[in-house]
Length: 587
Image: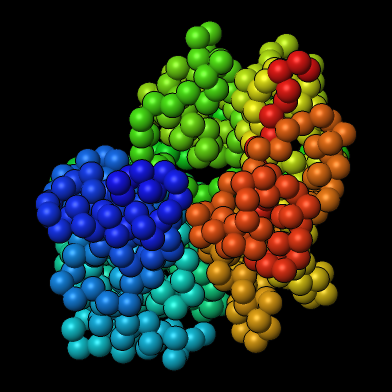
């Protein structure tokens, strides 16, 4: 009865029936899963998480793990008395129950509940922009309580930290690492593992942390000393490798090839400790492999448009997006039933570093994927991950969407989730892609909302007025000035994950080409090109709020209703408009 009521959308009544079933059989796995989904549909997040956790305790299925992760996407934990949520979130990160980015905020809320972390954050914030000495920062217990926080370490290794207070603590810890390294201070294996995780985080966020002039000078001293010792074949403390990698990618240091040999006592040349080896692989081996891969990626079109060339240059310097791990593959899916028999052809236009490409290819192993982008640096990152996952159904190619019309291929599904607004003309690029879409095919589109990006517009005005350059130094200075501005519109930028890595922040605030679109413009284009608007991709909570304002299923695909709703609630499309359109079968 509960399942039937859920199918009819009668959530409150469904919850009551499912709870009656669980009163009879408390460990009924299917009922617990249904209860979690019903609470989630009703916006009762805490109850949904509790039910999903109970379901996992009964039977830890892949579907149950994905459901728990889905429930936690919007969660912010204020308590965790028995540590159960921390243990489950640690498993979710290490076992890959979801994209790390989807779990980051929930993990940070749990990390902040660690009294040692909270105390260190307070001390780092109180001293900012200065960096307190290690003994003041860590207190009497030293770094051990932080180094023993496994959830913190795992999060540092897989996604940019999206919390300003925790970012400032990590910046202070990096300074403490530098002081210890220059003094050749001995560290415990646990501390070395912690500092290695900090170095990996700094590489992931591309060294976005604010940097004091004295600190930068000391980092250069360490890097020079490291290169000199390597060149002379002298032993190098592992902490030197880790600390150097926390300030700049090891790949750019003289003597990097010798780092890969593991040049430290007691024998020559052994391996580094595993935590240091992970830093070396991340910062030397993987970039070297990506350079080799870049030489193998074919150029499918010319790139002769001036805007396209400028955009390509930006993404060669700052590939986008930043990611380490994907979501789990889940059950194989067919993106279009009618294309299943012959095998589906999928185009990912503007694939960037390949996150959505890899995830789609894992979910649809029988489909044939072509992923194109302007940037070889972005493409080679995605191709490296695809090779590591043994994905044989993906091709990568360098191309300008504006010139793709000459491609002698057609596609059943086209993903253009974040590229059209960076073209010289989004509408021209959209029309080119529609020409590659088979009749009856589907296109997933992403476009920036003019209403939702008011904070970005304000930031771009600030950048123009103060002359920040789109360089690491300019981006760091801009971020610090935004955070200290006291302007609510500007400081709201920290609510988005893109604010917390160099490439993503440049993409967010400094992009060389950005168009912001309105829903009436989208409606006009859809009508002029005879497309069928299929609806927005939004979180359930956002859809519930819209349905409360505009009841009825027809409203979900009515762009006039959505325009009225966005005018009242501009934050609804704070990421971007993400939606699907279909090309009629007779076109």
